[in-house]
Image (cartoon, rainbow, N blue to C red):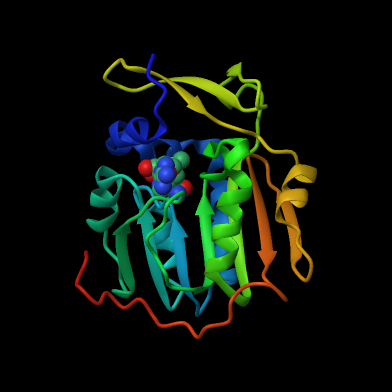
Length: 232
Ligand SMILES: C[S@@+](CC[C@H](N)C(=O)[O-])C[C@H]1O[C@@H](n2cnc3c(N)ncnc32)[C@H](O)[C@@H]1O
């Protein structure tokens, strides 16, 4: 059994989007798309851990510009090869735990990455994230609710309170994958800071956490990420 998250996703890239085809989840995905397109409308935004660009493609329809990052080139290759009607996306390889970016942004989105962050690394990760978003900007995370009968069962847990699933890829490989299912109170505790507004919404299969960076956060003006190096 393999337990490295980054190599698991590197190997999963070509089959990753099957998870967006589940019929029972379509209603939620349409709702989430509308909510996110509304929140980030007109913004120069950063998407962390963008994967194959499933959300990037949708966000780019209303955002001013999207800087989309992921650690895995196999994911970024698929994302780069999609059609983006407004040519307003830049893709860069970046590690969320050791980011080389120095831009600040008006909005930041992380889809299905919260659940993969070890609990003892959450505070450091969130500090980095907050420093990247300008005053008044939004930070939004979405992730899976645990839905019995639909979610892959939790197969392990560790002394730090993290939970893990045993997953299989189409090549037959088996992976132990960190997958945490935070309670709303825990999200509120981690994401609420003085001067910020926190909002939690639960759909049928997904949760959404929205933080409006009020008094905290840097306030440098943002520049659009308009594909300076033709990085598609
Ligand atoms: C569950 S997928 C989510 C992909 C995309 N956000 C989505 O919602 O479809 C998790 C993604 O996180 C990326 N990832 C894992 N560890 C990372 C890290 N340390 N820094 C940046 N990306 C990472 C993986 O390559 C993968 O694309």
